[in-house]
Image 1 (cartoon, rainbow, N blue to C red):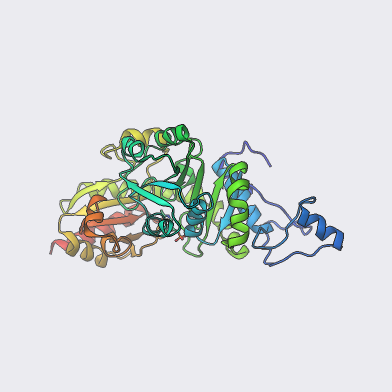
Image 2 (cartoon, rainbow, N blue to C red):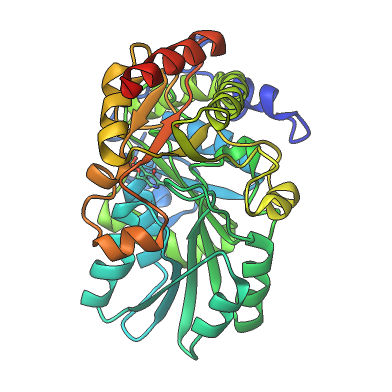
Amino acid sequence: MSKNWRPATQLVHGGTTRSNHGETSEAIFLTQGFVYESSEAAEARFKGETDGFIYARYGSPTNDMFEQRMCMLEGAEDARATASGMAAVSAAILCQLKAGDHIVAARALFGSCRWVVETLAPKYGIECTLIDGRFLESWEKAVKPNTKVFFLESPTNPTLEVVDIAGVAKIANAIGAKVVVDNVFATPLLQKPLELGAHIVVYSATKHIDGQGRCLGGVILSDKEWINEHLHDYFRHTGPALSPFNAWTLLKGIETLPLRVRQQSENAARVADFLAEQPEVARVIYPGRKDHPQADIIARQMTGGSTLVCFELKGGKEAAFALQNALDIVLISNNLGDSKSLITHPATTTHKNLSDEARAELGISPGTVRFSAGIEDSADLIEDFARALKTIKA
Ligand SMILES: Cc1ncc(COP(=O)(O)O)c(C=O)c1O
């Protein structure tokens, strides 16, 4: 296996191990346990003197292929596959903290991620400060002597703000804290947090990595030292392991990740440009457009514009609902990263649990809509939007 393969090749061949049948497609090892040739062999395996699997909660062959392939793509030394994106986020944060520690997190986080740092962590004596992650001064100001983890998402959900990952990593390194990046919105193809100085990257593999709306999954990637010191035991004993069947589904999904993300990003860019010209639309936020307020940071840290578009309708919630209801091809769903185009109204779905004030701080208004581009023909998507926008005018 060559580490020098380009991403498209890594995603088809990386990490593959074949059984003695020489199967073309990766095998699903749907097994809970493993048998040993002798008592001595079992003892040696448990002592760590010989390589091999012990129990599927610790690791298993199909999951191992998925983890290896993700490591190649991300440029990480090691990884653990989890049952969902939230299992990855909560394990990555909690495994390295104890009562008395402090987290600094950007306030623009996916709702469940925000709940983990804002509500769950304090129950265990872990303090959290939420800040406006767009400004490096906010990160600096929030640091305390007990700060151990910085947590951020970039671009953010749903308003596609970005955080200067290299800048945050510099501040973290100066105080010995670890930076955890939820890289779901960027995908491993459009942004490489580890190269920018982050220490741990997490994904909801449910999104672009599966990309076909089938199964939940997640992954945590970092260096071997961090995984051995913090995650290894936590992962084995708390049990967030991914099902081997889902690991296989995700392996097949990532074979086509570059094709899908390329098409989705092109579609997102075309739809963003179209929407920006429409009189019903107050503003469009798309990381690939020059008018994005943080275009300079995006140029430094991303290689593409993302597969998501956020826009605001002048007619508020009424217009947003009417537009969503009138779309034919684009489906109403709070999911994202699917090969089918999806649309959601954050204020009444994904971000409904936030206070009006917290939503306003994040720039989520009643007219805000999030579009997740699929792999359809962009001309059909634009026709769908053009027709649906006409209905809201009437
Ligand atoms: C940015 C982000 N992080 C984490 C998650 C959680 O992933 P999952 O639903 O796979 O648990 C999601 C979506 O649900 C998300 O959008």
